[in-house]
Length: 441
Ligand code: SF4
Image (cartoon, rainbow, N blue to C red; front, side, top):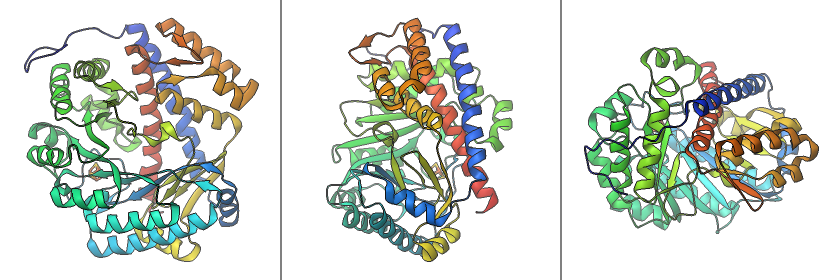
């Protein structure tokens, strides 16, 4: 099915009852996740038990590495922990990161790390520093490490693509965010122009196993028509994936966004999501998560879908090993001091209750657009029975069918529900980041 520029998107609405249900579930998820993270703020990491917990981890874990520096001006919609790029400060940070990597590799001895996801911030702001860091990570976690990197379009050209390929980067994700100057301005993304984004995608296309483009929807002034048209333009740039993120405000920006009718409060929010989905299906892409539209790539945008356990390096990194979660400190100077003193920078940490662990696992499964009752029951036993039965009843109500052991979430209403719930979880994480940066810890 094709569509011409300027054509109105087809209408195929999510039933209003499904929208209401998704909103109720998303509100409950937000409340639950915020309660968890508020509790976590009070739970300072105790260095000795942190070492013990990380040492007890075993099996496959993904690794998240945070690079916190960005080109200026910083984007106003952004909820990540990021600071303006300064070459000297960035070099000191990368040195500390190497020390933390050494600590992690020697402590988590029984862990195998198949994948590293380098996010930020803007990892490519210093592409040579990044390549050296990848080398360091490989020396500690193995030559076979699959490497995924986020990039700003202004950093991507023939030279940087060659550097990244030589460093073994398999998946590159370019933060395009919008494809009109007007939308970039409305989003507050001023560090690159539309022409930079198009050039960057052209320079990287076909040169990585997976090329992803990040887009954002849900700003003031977005309509179903404009979101649909822009989604089609992004999909036609020829990347193997396009990930369409909704705006996910932390608590401090929610009031303003409510007043402006943005993000979750956009008056056409369900319709905007449908417009994205419709454009993706028409362009031959399939949802790998509610947001990541994929065309035949194996490495998808969110490592949390493939790995429910992950370690973290760098400031604000969040790690989750068996029933244990930890968060690194939030400021560059604090991070460097902590790493120098202890080898790691864990600021907050806490053991997870079986219910918390199960809720996280279940939400990651739904985010990967699967629901596998047998897997849940095998992992959590009778504890999982009520949750599993309720979700199955909801899926059947929506019209999803079980294929073998699992349900695949394919209906627009299921995808919309998974989107709304995951956004709640990320909004709660953004609340933690906002707190960490404001507290300067
Ligand atoms: S959106 Fe990306 S480039 Fe913009 S400030 Fe946030 S981390 Fe930096």
